[in-house]
Structures are given as structure tokens and as C-alpha cells.
Length: 494
Image 1 (cartoon, helix red, strand yellow):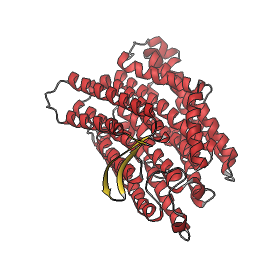
Image 2 (cartoon, one colour):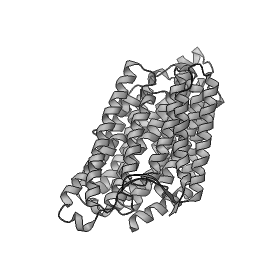
Image 3 (cartoon, helix red, strand yellow):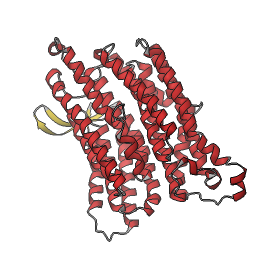
Image 4 (tube, helix red, strand yellow):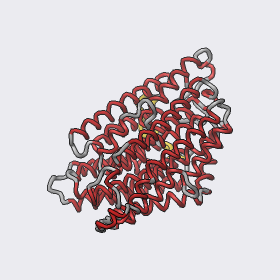
């Protein structure tokens, strides 16, 4: 694998630029801040593309100790995740240029928005467990200002809850890091795992406990039951573009951590058929059903979408826990599709709040008459999340069900598809009434008439792009499947 310092640019450029933005004078014009942020997003995205084009590369920044380097590696999994991060981060950033006009402290928001982008790129390109842990902690601490941006009591309390849950989860991962260093050959992410058989012999039970604790630790960020409480508290209080990236991207950092733990640290073979796999599968299915039920019962628009994220991200975790190629394929597809769909849905919700101030689902009768393009995008995104073909959600859920049926996991082989189907029905129940009542509000509302309140093109274009992607990625998934086949082939051949 070739050494390339180019890996560092998309990591540290937005961090430095965002930091400079934070220290600019209070009198700096908003237009200047928007131009700096736009330039930062564009240049970083172009740098990411350059890294993706050059293929697998690595770079050691410095040594913490002789055995603990800060090491970056652009492997196939990291390149997949950074591609998703870049698309969503840039689109939500563009949307935020107009949305944040009615919010205070734009300098702080855009500064931290750029910084977190760089940290996420660093997280995706982390080549070993110590580097991953450092960027994971930084991501939690520096995304916190996006949560409590409004500085209301509700936002501050939600931010503290987010911080408490996330730090506790990270400490579980840190606890596991010590044992991996003791019983592994290296901390560098290696397909098939890094455990040394000569050291592991006789300590298998201990290492299974360690693996489970690490999965729980990273599962906190992914909203896994019973640690999902921070997510429906934090996501609704953030500004809409921040909610979009929190729900579509930040939670995926926990997913990436779980992928690294299962497939690059312990190895799928070590966990196959153990109590760790069975308990983890149980927790994922409980979370899928629980999140869907809570979303179905929730009346607030953004909080409903937040509960939906709890459910949908556990689709991904379920696929990873199956420990077979089909399940892994479905999980990675859902990483991409959920990021696109849920980010789009939060941006739709933000557009509604921006133009009407309405935050409750019961207030949205006739909203389709007032904002037809926004609600049209919301309809497409909802159909994709439910999994109605040919939209993207259908493809990922097909592979998840196929992986479950092909797995040697006993009751989970049939229970998984049943729970996924029930969750899809509940998803239809909590999403489709919004566009249905929005476009067909009833005679009484029709008589009152509706005023056009559509948002302008700066906010509409990202919505349209995400809605189109949600459909086209499902209609033409061949390229993604080829990319993911390379990843699964490498992981399961190891």
C-alpha cells in the first residue's frame, strides 16, 4: 500500500478553516462566513475525491509510542463511508446557508460544521484502533455545539445527555482497546481480525466479554437499545441541517466502529455462533421494533424522524451481526440509503418549520398544497425508507432478509425478516399520513384556501438531489453492489 500525505489534507484543512472561522471578529458579515464555509466544503470534497481516485493509501502522522502510531489508511470501507459523509455534508451545508439566516451565532455553527466534517474524514480514514478512538472522541465533543446551538434549556439538557451517553460508550471501547493490545498482534485494522491465536488460547471467554462491551460502546452512538435515549432528545433540538447530519451521518460513526470491531479486530469467525452474536442480534431486533413503535406513537415531526433513525440504524446492525456476506451487503447498502433518505427527510422537516413554524404532525394538513415540491420530495423519501420498490430501501432490506434466511442463527433466521416486515408496516404508518393529509386535506381545509410557502432554490436543490438519489440508487444499484462485493469478498475470505 503506497504512502500518501494527500490523506491529511481533507482531514486537517476543514478543521483549520473552521477554527479560523470561530476566531473571526464578531463584526464579520454573514455573507463572508457563508463564502468561507462554501469554499471549505467544496475544496475538502474535491480533496476527498482525489483520495478516492488514487485508491488505497496510508500515512503515519506521528508515533504516540513506538507501538501506537497515529495512522491513516484509505481502505475500501473507509472510502465508502467518506463518500457518503461528503455527499450528505455538502448538501446539508448548502441547505444551511439559507436555513441559518433565522438563527443566531452563524459563525459558531459554520465553524463547528467544518471542523466536524474534517474529523469525520479522519475517522473514516483511521487505520488503527487508537487513531479511530481519538477521532471518535473528538467527533463527540466537537459535534456537541451543533446539538445545543439554540442554547435553550431543552437544547442544553439534550446536549448533556448526548455527551454523557457518548462518553460512556467511548469508555467501553477504550476498555476493550487495552485487551486488544494485550491479545492481538497489532492495533492496525486487518481484515479477518488481529487476535494472536497463541495468546488467545484459554482466554476466549474473557475476549468475548470484551468484544461485547466494545459493541455496546459503539452501539451507543448508533442508538442501540437500551442506550438509544440520547438520540430522540438531541436530534430534534438541533437546527434542521444539523439534525440531518446527526441522524444521517454521525450515528454511522457508531456503525463504522462496530464494523471495525467485528471484522477488523476480532474477526467474524471468532464471534460466529457465540452468545455475543445471539445477544447482539436480539438487541438489534428489539431496537428495530421499539424504534418503529415509538415513531408511530410520536406526534412531533422531528422527534418522529429521530425515533425512526433508532429503528433504521439497527437494520444495519442486524445485517452486520448476521456475519455473512448477504447480511453485510444489506448493511452497507442501508448505510448509504439511510444516510440519503433520513438526511432528506430532516431537511424536508426543516423546510416546513422554516416556512410555517409548524412542528407537530397534526398541524400539517394541507401542507402539500402550500409546499408541493418539498412534500413531493418527502413522499419519495418516505417510500424509499419504507422499502417500496424500485426505491433504494427495498434493495437493502432484500439483502438483509436474504442474509437472515441464509444464516445459521436458528430462530433469528426467520424472526429477523418478520421484524423487518413489521417495522416496514409501522414505517408506512408514521410517514405516509403526512403527505396523504398534506395533499388531500379534506373539504373543510380546501374551502379555507392555501397560501404558497415553498422554500427557495438554495434549500430546494439539496432536497431534490437527495430525493432523486433515493430512487435512482434503488433502480440502478449495480455499481454499489460491485463495490460492496469487493469489501465482502475481502472480509469473508480472510
